[in-house]
Image 1 (tube, rainbow, N blue to C red):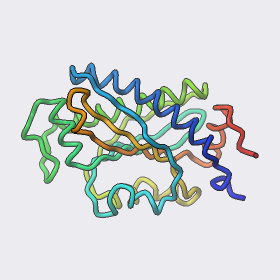
Image 2 (spheres, helix red, strand yellow):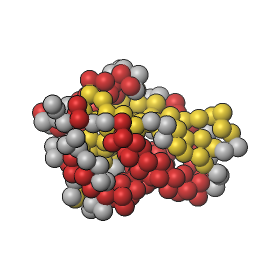
Image 3 (tube, rainbow, N blue to C red):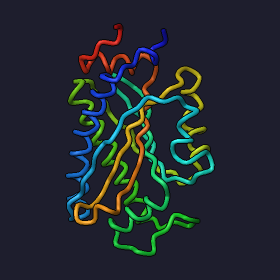
Image 4 (cartoon, rainbow, N blue to C red):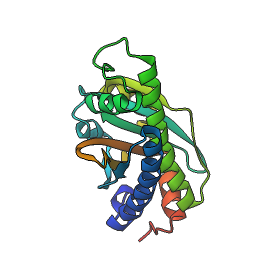
Length: 212
């Protein structure tokens, strides 16, 4: 039986709990950044194959805003945060107050790109901090990189080397909304791709048995 086949629902429940705590930290940080009360939650955590990732974000031709960072430390791996460009524009306009900011075609406003990169940094950092607190593993993020491109192109570049050794990713679905405007909800996906050995190491550190 492969490692992927041994992943059970209670393993994902633990990762979801970690995600919700990280989301709480991120909501606090975003509330301070935006000076508004932000709600953020994790409705689901799943394990999917690489081939399913692009379909999840609307297909390989779907243009997205993606933050990529590398995890270093006790359990190395990679992480992407992807959000459709229209929702990335909406979030960035909230932060910068620039209602003309757009990601449809270059050139893009540098201030908006920096703000978007900082948002991705806050979201990813909050989740990693929660995961590190739970596991007691030393997990350090690299400097995040922002890309605006088709999801297929971004994932092909980021996963080319990794796909030689693993073929699955942990998906953490994320919903972000302003409490007073809850109908305007943003949806994004974290893709956590642990290196070989790292996934099992993370689950063991969380106290989850994986040899059942």
